[in-house]
Picture 1: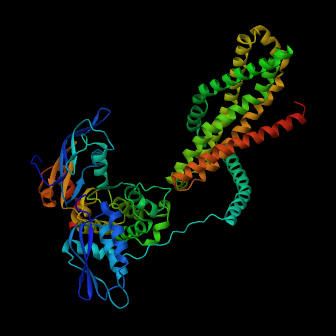
Picture 2: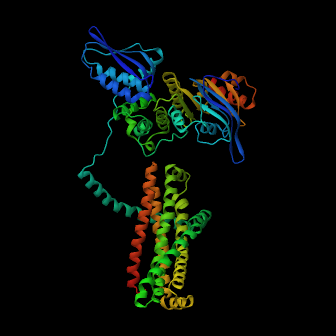
Length: 256
Length: 377
C-alpha cells in the first residue's frame, strides 16, 4: 500500500484511533482510487465504521493524515473543508433521514442550503433522484416513519446523491434488505457509478455485494489493512480469516 | 469563474442550433437555470431546433435534467427538439433523466379562517380524548398493580429502586436549594410588609402555614413534573420510536407492568419525601432570614412556629403529594406512549407532558383546597 497513487481520491496514512485504552485503528494506510467501488470488509467490531467516521471527520484520531480530493483535512481551512463536504455524500447505516421532514424535504435539504435555485428545479431534481434510486415520485410527501427499511435506504442514498457528489460513503447499504432488494441495490450502485462517474467507498458484510458490485476489496483486521485487491486475490490469500470468509460455506453458496 | 456554462444560439438556415459548453453541473445550477429559462422562450420560433452538447466539459444530474427540460419545452406537436453530440459517457445519464416525470404537487394546508376555526374545534374536542386517555392509563396502571399484588414475584424491585434513585435521590440537591431560597424570599417579603404594622412575629405563622400546606408540595410537584415527568415522556417516547415497546409486548411482557408501574411507584414514593425535605428546607431558609434580617431569634421562631401550626397543616400537605405524583406520572406515561415516529413529535409530547402535568397539579391543588375547607382541616 506504500506506493504513491496519483489518482487516489482518498489517501489515508498511518492513522491511529483510540477509545480510552482500546486501540481500534493502529497505523492504518488506505488508498481509494478515482472511479472505483471499494468494498471494505472485516470482522464485526473490527472498526470499519470507525474508519469511515474518521475519514469524514466524526471521530477524532490520535495521529495520522487523511487527504480527500488531495486536501489534507487537518490543515484545511473551514471553507476548504466545506468545499470537500459538498463533493461527498454519505449513506449512514440506519439512513439517518431527518425524521421531521418529508422525503421531498430530506432530498432537497442539501441543495436548498447550498444552491440558489428555484423551487421548481429543486422539485424536478428531487424526482430525478427518486427515479434514479428506483422509487416512485408518489413517496415524496411521506415521512421517514412511513417508509419500509429498503425505501429508507434508497431515500438516504438519494439524499447522499443530492448534490451530485464525486465520492459516496455507503455504510452497510444492503444490511436489512431482502436478497432481491440487496441485489437491486448493488445493481443500482453499479449503474450510478457508471452514469455519474462516482467513486464509492462501501462498508459491507454482504458477499454478494463484494462479488457483483465491487472493483476492489480491502480487509480490516487488528487495526490495519490486512489485504487489498480483487476477489481472486482475496481467495488466494493465506490469511486464516480471509480463508474462512471467502472460502467458507456461505461464500461457496454465493459462487455456486 | 472559468468553465462557466454557456448556451450559444447559432442559426442554421431554417433551423437553430443551441450549443452548450462549459460545466453543466450542480455548482453552476443557478446560472444554468437562468440560461435554460431564457432559451425556453425560443419555443416555436423556428421549425427545427437542436441542442448540441458536444462542447460540454462536464455534466451531472442537474445539467442533464436541465438539457432534458429544455428539449421537452422546445418540442411541440409538429417538431421534436433533438439532442446532438452526446458522448458515450453521458448518454446513460441523459437516458436516466428522460424517465423523470413531473413532480407531484405539494399538498399544503393554506391558512384560512375556517381552517383556524376547525383547528380550535378539534383541539377542544381533543380535551375529552385527553381525559379518557388519562383515565385509561390510570385503570391500566391499577390493574397492573393489582396483578403484582396477587403475584408479588412479578414485581420489578430493581427497576423501581433505579427510578427511585433517579427521581428522588438525585433530585434532592436542587429541590432543597430551590425551596430553601423560596423560604428565604417569603420570609423577607413578609417581614418587610408586616413590619409596618409592628407585626414582625406573624411572619412565622405565614411561613409555617404557607410552606406546610401549599407552597412546599406545590413547588416540589412542579419541579418534579419538569424534571422527572419530562424524562419519563422522553424515555418512553424514544423506546416507542425504536419499537422497543413493541418488542416487549411480543415477548409476552406487559409494558405497563414492566416500564410504567415501577416509574409510577418510584414517583409516588419520591414526591412525599421530596415535599417533606422541601418544606423543611423552606422553613429553615425562612427562619434564617427572620433571624438575620428580621431579628427574630431562633428560639422565638420555634416557639411561635409551635403555636402557629398544628399537625393538620402538615398532614394536608403530605396527603396531596402522592396524588400529585400519580397525576404527573400518568400524564407523562400517556404522552410518552403517544409519541410518533419523528423527533419533532418527541419534542411536542415532552412539552405537552410538562405543561399538562403542571396544569393538573394546580387543578388538583385547588380541588384539595375545597375538600379540606369543607371537612374543616
